[in-house]
Amino acid sequence: MLANRIHLTIDSNLADVFLVGLLINSASRFVGLDETEAYQMELCVVEAVNNTIRHAYGGQAGHEVAVSAAISPSRLEFSVADRGSPISGDVLAARRWEASAADHDPFALDQLPEGGMGLEIMREVMDQVDYESRGGVNCLRMTKRIPVPVLEA
Image (tube, one colour):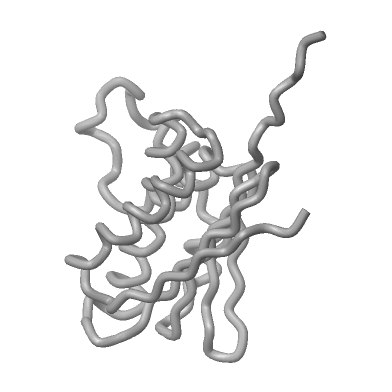
């Protein structure tokens, strides 16, 4: 079945990121995710947008950040695209969560590293996370499968 698609382009201004959160949370609730799951989807996509603004564009406003959501009965697919600096291979390959878990008390949240956890959160919450930089366009894609309810006879 073909997915319905929603596209939103915002300025690279952190004050505009709330719009992305509204879109993602609403789309997630629309397909039947509960409040917690919808918040997790929102968190992942908002984190990706924040990272784009902070790192790809160096915190400068005036650049486009394109967000899309593809909605189907079996999955949600989100993408965040920009024309800023690409994510380095070192950042993509790093697995800070495992290092943090081994080096820190998992219940001492104030002792966890402050930066670099966003990709790990995305990898933990989403079923698939892919990144591509081609032709000057960077695109982070995240997929979450939606369990199909079992009908009882």
